[in-house]
Image (cartoon, rainbow, N blue to C red; front, side):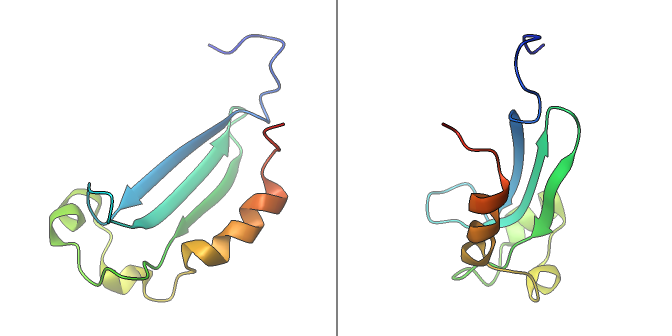
Length: 88
């Protein structure tokens, strides 16, 4: 439970799906919500380098075809910088 004095709109929860479990793998899904339950982002992400991820596709069900027309992580970054609460 969060302390009562904490601004629940500034507490963020992230859910990421990736092409694998290693440092060279890429994000293919981003979901962000605040502690009020507001969904701030829920999108597929087109990876820059990976073209297939057979092992993790069996876990999360996200296929290369599903992310083909999605924004890249770099394209999502400006939105995150302007819309997500500051960490200051």
